Length: 181
Image 1 (cartoon, rainbow, N blue to C red):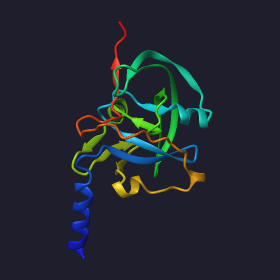
Image 2: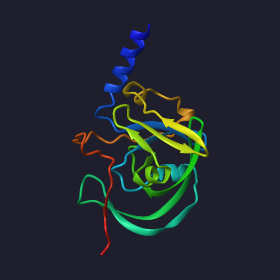
Image 3: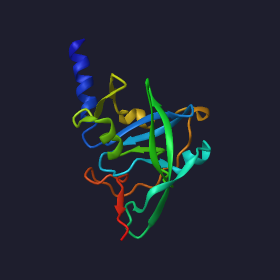
Image 4: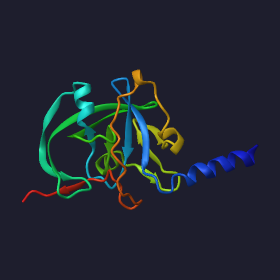
């Protein structure tokens, strides 16, 4: 029995070798997609989430221009939103930039990791941190869980973009921020 469990654990860990952290969270009791990516220099909420939940927005303190993969297309980021979310028993809020992205609902970037003093285990792809005196461990979805269907009434739908050329060193969700001169 112990040998079987060890084998399953090794298989799960090997599936994380080239994956960024994918999970699901609840925002206003709706299941939403979540990515944690330390290469992203901002926390980002999809405009779709903001609109569907009628969340109150505020002007961005430091507006900027954003480019995703294509440097030709820039987006003005000038609005922020405070997102209350939960992952299991972990409930928190995060200030996010409101960006019209369709691939995910919530992207927790370097600012969230910095503020929470997270530790990332690159082998298991788990995040560890303390929150209100409790040790929190966030585990990623397995590749099978990522594609698992959720009943529509619980899920805020996303539009999945056509597959873009992708290598492990360049996530399609990493943000590039252009400094205003």
